[in-house]
Every structure is written in structure tokens, then in C-alpha cells.
Length: 464
Image 1 (cartoon, rainbow, N blue to C red):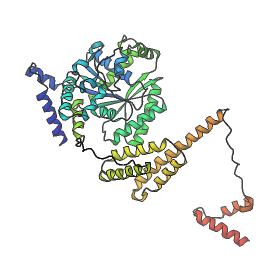
Image 2: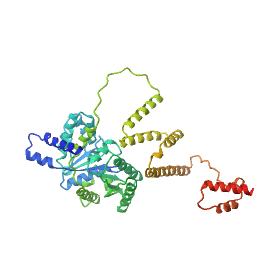
Image 3: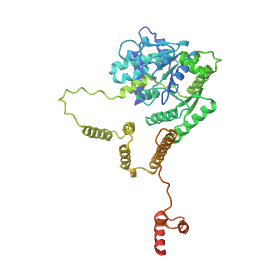
Image 4: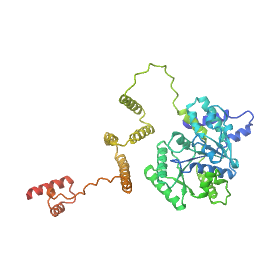
């Protein structure tokens, strides 16, 4: 049903977007062009995602390709700033009806075109169907003029960034050797898989010291994704850390504009070739980015009618508000058991709320909540999987505690920690150690702990 709907949507685009001045042959050629769509993303900010997206787009344009770069990172148009361009209008102005999509296009070197503030496309989901279709129709007409459409997505796990990844046929996740970058990239891939993402993400290792380190970082991420997510990753390549690349950001002159003999420029030339090889292995999508966003907007629930004004109810106490919120949450989750993404978001926000003040009360709440879960309803595989994750969590808590202790010991200005007495053997309660060892050796190896204790007690009583 969805495929038929999407084909109908594309036909509607073909019918409505053709201008009177465009010939039938030009329109047919125009609509037959299907750009390859790439999303450059990352689990966190500061990994060089925008730099990779911009230099990759410039290098493809340098290779005589028609390239459109969507700056979806923020409404501040970071891509444009890296080129020394400061746009007066972004896609938000198009959404507001102040100008057309052509009016906000920025022209860069080698014929690269940039749409600043492309994250504003999500606002189309909150518009009326007519206005939303008008903007997405213009975006569909625009993107079909290019060979490549590259999106510099928003970092993190925000819905806009996740939709931008899903709209592209190739996702390039930028990762650095920083452990925090690996953790955030893994979280991004995990959320994508939970939301039904079925394609294989490609990984670009940025700021690496060399090929060996880049490979090592990728293998760590790939191993974790295979083990915990059953999701193998694709290695796209690495970008080495050098002074030229750092200065290019400060000088607002990307390294892709340097001579091809420059090592930094040559890295992105190689990356562009790797992207072409990867895209050649993937089937081209029949619908573009605009068609994807249109389908998302169609799936949004229609706005409820504005109710008549009511007399303000008396203010509730914090306890009454919490109880009401819990009751509403139970009602919603009880009606949507088939939506795991909704439950995932709810639990993540609740635990994040508890984690803001990790005091003894919060710990007791978490313990009580875990104890109230009906573990007997899980099968053996689910229990084993959950137990493994709880063990990883426990290891992380202990590691954090060790790190805090080490930091406290290194800080000479901090007060010394209280030292507990070393445990010692209680001869009064358990008797001579040699006799206890001989008694233990006399017991069979397969005896249970309960039987062992009973046997020792009986033996002591008989000796007495």
C-alpha cells in the first residue's frame, strides 16, 4: 500500500511541478533524473561532520558533478559560514512564505549549490497539507536538477536528524578516536535500528593519526554493533588529523579548494571515489528527499479542533499533577503496545529525569522499579540478554566509582576518605582455620552451599 501511495505522490509531483515554459522533453528529462542522496551525520557535535560534508560536496562538484548541499545542522547555516558566506534568508523564510526556494540558494566554488537552514523542512510537518505540498514540491523539483544531494544532518538523536538520515540512501556516520564519539555513534546506530532502519551505515573515521588507528577505531565500533545490535557496518575511510585541515576551518577556505597535490585535498578526493564505489553497490531510490518528507507529514496525526474556552480549574498540587500524568501515560501506553519506539522514548526520558539527581532516593526508586518487573514473563533468551546488559551497567558504575576514587586520591586538597578496617578471620566463631579447611576438603565437590553449611554445623555438634 505504501509503495502505491509513494508512486502516486511522485506522479502528482510530475504533473504539478512542470512550469508552462518547460517543454515536454525537458520536463521528462528533468523528472527522470534521480540524484544519489547522502546523509553525513554523527552521534555528537565536534566530530568534524560539517567539514566532511562540505569538502566531500566540493570534491564531487570539482569532479564535474552537479551537487546540492542541504545544511540541516542548525538554522545558523554552519556550512555557509565555513565558506565565508552569510545568508540573509534560510529555508525557514521559504516555509514562512517570505521568498521562494530559488531565492535562498547559495553558489559556491565549482558550481556547488547550498540550501542554508535545511533543518526547517521539519516545520512542513506542522503546516497545512496545501502549504506543505507547495514547499516539498519545490524541493522535489530542485533536487532533480542534481547528481548528488548531500545533507549535513543535525547531530544527536533529535527527530529532525533521524528523519534526514532515513531520507537518504547512504548514511555516513562521522566518528573520531574519542571514546565519547564512539559511544554516541553507537547510540545513534542503536536508535536508528530500533526505529526500523534497515540499511547498512557507512563509517568515516575523522581526526585519526593514521590508517592503523582509523582501522582500529572502526573495528571497535563495528564489533560492538555486530555483537549488541546484529548490525555490521561499512568502512568508508579515514581522514587524518593535520594542521592544514585545522587552518582551513579558521581561514574559511575548505581543503577541497586546494591543489590536488596537497595531501589534505587528496584525502577528500579519495573519499569521493569511495562514496561513488559504495553508491554503485546500492540500488538507487525511486523517491527523493522531498517525497520522504511528504510521506512523513502524511503520517502525522491531524490537528484536533480547538476546544471552547473553559473555566480555569483550581491549581493542582505537585503530587496531584504527577498522579494525573502517570494515569495519562498508562492510558496511552496501554493503547499502543505495538509501538516500541514510543515506550523507548518514555523510559529514556523518565530515567534521564531520575538521573539528574542521583541521590539515595533516586537509587531506591530505580531498585524498586526493577523489582516490580515481571521477569517470569521473559523467555530464556530475553533474560540472558537483559542480564548481560545489567552486568555491563554494573561494570560501568563500578568503573565510574574507581575513577572517582582515583581522582580523589590525586587531588591533595580534598579530604582523605575514611578507610574501612581490613576483614580478618573470626577464630572465635569459626574455630581453627586448619580444622575448617580439613572439614571443607572432606565434603564432596558437587555439594550445594546449603548442604555444606548443614554438614559443617552437624560435624561441629558431633565433635562437641
